[in-house]
Image (tube, rainbow, N blue to C red; front, side, top):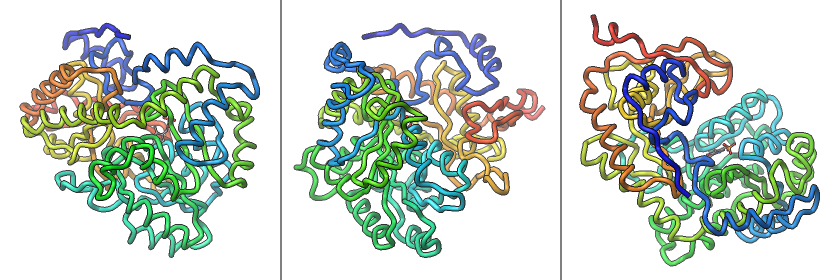
Length: 453
Ligand SMILES: *Cc1c(COP(=O)(O)O)cnc(C)c1O
């Protein structure tokens, strides 16, 4: 399946970006030339998946498509209980509605934004326990997504009896699609279990994580992705999954666990929020396509092709000297915007500014994973400037060619070459109280001011 791309002029893009309140989430897809906003639901399905759509069973309850999907999930992850949901955040909503109480503390390695949203909106606290190595973008270590055992110990020790579970995110999306090692998964789970705390794996990119374990961790080179997957999940108590990423479908998600109490509790929330427990907001045909997608994306060749394309883009950026979170992650390149636009003060959101500049340059829509997304502290309402400020170039699965990677790199180089002229960033004019990055209005501070005139 192919789609046409639409080119545009700089003048058109200036007008469109203005109409979008300088927030690329508010652009129309026709206004975008190459769309790197996300790899979520934007992949192309295979011939096998399309053929599975035709076999979808749309029965309200007990559809064959559900049992087909459930069978694949049970086989890959070895969990007894499986609940489909319409996407990852819905899985979080259903499970967390049962597990999270006001005042709880939920440690995790850089909680994803919706995960954090579902914790904080229930007046609980998401505490980041990612290794400090992740904060230094230029440091080349193989497993930058790891949990800091020291930080996790402190949180568990200080909050005994108040931690309903820990969230282990693989790959660690927020710090750059960086993997977690098998050794770290094992140690993290052992530590949590010592404190009687169960572990939920936030599994959106589990297959990419398994690929990195195979290619980077001693002792796994000869194991298959499916064997590594089974081992990863053998340590945890349950999973939430956004199937829009490593499930290779446009929409879908699920919860799986061996914990019968969680299963019974989650079902209570699945039915009113998502639908009956054998469809959970998904069509039968989509459950079938997801079953095929999970099977395909746990094959080494598929993952290698994808991750090599991301590495190809990284190599181009190396040629141009553009700094990004090293080494290249699984699904995206995360450009270190603070280093590129080092004259833009952090209060003016360098990564958000770079997102606007790249769109104006070439119609490429990237995504800010930085101070805008970090949002405000729910109590003090201060901006959270403590983390990384990154521009994410996210690569959809099986969609673009290496030629597109060349265009992306060249466009970014053009912005990089005139980075010294960019001294002012954006100013937030309006923001929502939660997850502001999706809808915020944040115009570029006027050209006149930007040139210091
Ligand atoms: C995408 C994602 C989610 C949320 O899933 P949706 O399908 O977008 O609702 C949760 N966690 C991680 C790590 C993700 O990447």
